[in-house]
Image (tube, rainbow, N blue to C red; front, side, top):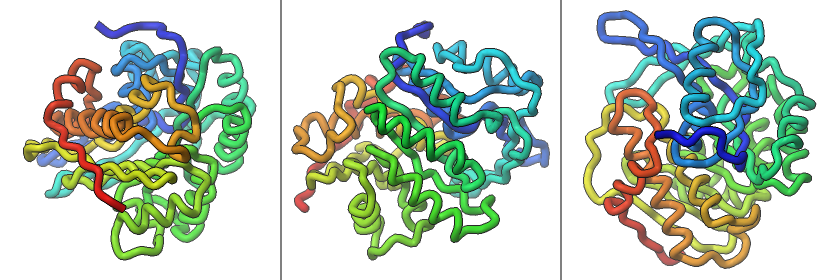
Length: 332
């Protein structure tokens, strides 16, 4: 059973939409989705009191999105629906199981929000200690909303977690998009990025680890969580500690939709459990703590990829997978 109405610990801001997923026969199956929507559900399903900040539509899809969030125990900052329509994403899946997206996001519900709306909702959430955003919220078109809100959250002393989660195929000006994402990441205490994100950002370095080090060094963040697909994931801390993790046995991957979102949720859940401060990666971090954080994130993502669509795990399902995660501490 899901816990309902938990005290708010985390707030999320970003897209909630419908994925229209291409089927072999040419039909498109509608599925609830959006990176931040997936992240929000995944946090709540692992027992973290989560506040979703964006409005949802009064249309059929919006009602389904709201119902799913509430059923998982998420608190809606805007429980009243808005008249704008729900965002859509047309999703094709490659032979390797990777999703390919096209988005329809003009005049949509989850973008019908202001800096004042976001900031006020966070101010009213007693006990709120961490905020998450990323993915489509990092579009340059939403800079005037997202960046001042992020600045206010840092000023309020909350931990800011940003998932780069780039969508280059749907951004008309890729250079502007890269610059804006790098600007947004300057507000992060914790950055999550994939090896594909780092390559898209044109960061210096011969491999993902070197590119991640460059991104971390050029930011104010104290930690970078790097996902490497089938090769697992890493935590890179400003203090110098690097942790690697991978499941010990090959996974039977159904698809990778939502895997990064579940990974980030697993990381944030563990951060909250350890009550870590915003700059926890700047000072020495106990290796065992770092190992627990990364293992929880990897186990969360691994459960997701064995399901069709994004099905975030419950806390007990993550716990059951943790024994399969191998963690190592390579020397710098």
